[in-house]
Image (cartoon, helix red, strand yellow):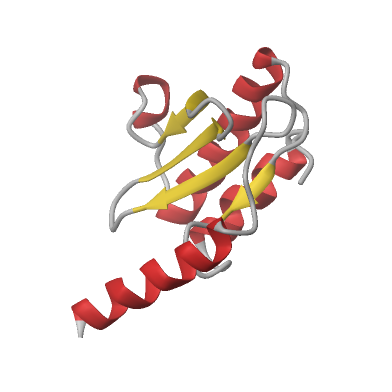
Length: 118
């Protein structure tokens, strides 16, 4: 069963990635979600570099208490603040094959509320 789930996510990921890519002006905001942690990166696909990143394992965010969804919202707010410091205001959202539900949605909504446009 696990193999089918991984294969399904890989196919979705490839299908989405063939249509979206990030630039220096509008980077790709990609989400990685594990069972316990969540992380997000802003990627310039033209040069293949990461412009900014935030994770629930960052020193500032480790002390946060709450559910995994609440921590995802904190990570979303954090990436929006880091992006603003880097001069990025608009991004292309890449859910990375995950359903737009739960922690992924909480992260995206928090980033939007903090000022990122996508």
